[in-house]
Image (tube, rainbow over all chains, first blue to last red; front, side):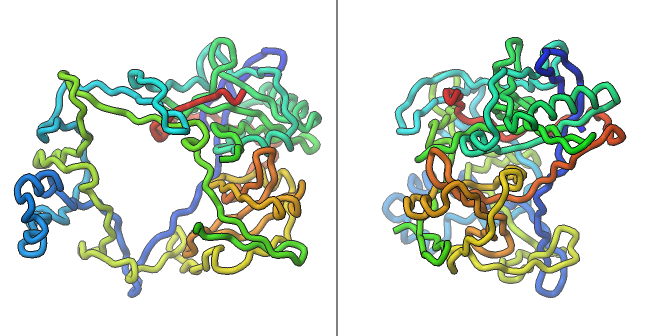
Length: 230
Length: 199
C-alpha cells in the first residue's frame, strides 16, 4: 500500500497506508480454434499518405487516383508493427518543430474561450512531510454527499501499527456515528484539492467511516464532478 | 432521435434516453496548443525511433494478431475470463429489452462501486416513481461481454443511471495492520480543465 499523511479532527497527523484491491477484469481474446491472440500497434498512415499531401500532389484528380493507384497506402510501411513511439510536434511544413511552447486554452462549457495559460503539471500532495491531508470541518450527510457528487475513485486507508489503529478507528467511528462524510484537503492550509500522484488529476476528497465492534473501514472518496443537470 | 432505455417499475412502463455526464459539459475543457519559436501552431505526430519515420496523428492503429502475426478479424475472436479459463457470455444490450426495477440497493451498496459511466435520464414520471429509493439492475450499454451493475437514483440535479463494478472495503481489526511500500503509482491521465467552484 502507498503512504498518506493525514490528520484528524484535533490536527494530530500520522503516516498511514492507503490502497485498493479493486481491479476491473480485462477479457482475454482467443481465436475460435483456441489459439492465443495479441494486441499490437501498426502503422496505418505516413506523412506521405496524409490527406494534405495527397491533395497537394494530385489536386482534383485525387479521387481517380485513389481508385486507380491507392496512393493513400504506402505498401512498404502500411501494417508494420511499432513497439514504441515518441510524441513530436510538426511545423506546417511537416518538419519536426523545436523549442515548442505548450499553452492551455481554457473553454467554458458553452464553448467560449476563457483564458490561455502556460501548461502546468500537478504535484502529488498526499504524503508531504509536515503537510498532512486535513479535515476541513465541512461535514456532509452521507446520503446528501452521494447524491451531490460522482465519486470517481475510492481508496481504503489502513493502520500500520497499534498507534495508528487507534488513530484511524477513532476517525472512522466519529464519521460513522455522524453518518456523514468529511471534506478533507491538501496543501499548507488544508483546503487544496487532493492530488494522489505527480501529474494526476486534482480531486475534492471526502472521508467516510464504518465501524463494527473493534473493526473499522476508513474510505477516502475522490470526486471532480457534481451530479448536475446537463 | 436518441435511443431510449425502457424501464418497468411497479407495473408501469417508462422510457428515457441516457445522456452521458461528462466534466466538459458541466465545467468546460482545456485544449493544449503547441507553438514553435516563431509562434506558429504545431500539429502533434509520432516519431518511430527505429527509423525516424514520422507518423501523423491518427496514423497508428491497434490490431489483434495471432501467434504468427496474422491479422485477426473480430469475428474470429472469443472473449474469455482474465485467467483464460472461462468463455465469457455475450449479453444483450440494455436497450434491447425493458429493464425491470425490482431490486432496491442500500446507500452502502451504491457507494461501494467503481463507476465506469454516469448518465442523466430525463423522465419526470420515472423520477417520481423512483423517489428516494436506489434501484439496482444488470446493465450493458452496448451488449457483448462487458456489463456492469446499474443503479438508478434521484439527486437534486435530476435522475441518474450509474454503471459500475463492485468495490470491496473490508472492515479491518488491530491485527490487520499493513505496510507501506515505496511503489509509485503510475502517473494518471493528463489533467483536463478544473473548476472547483462547486464549493
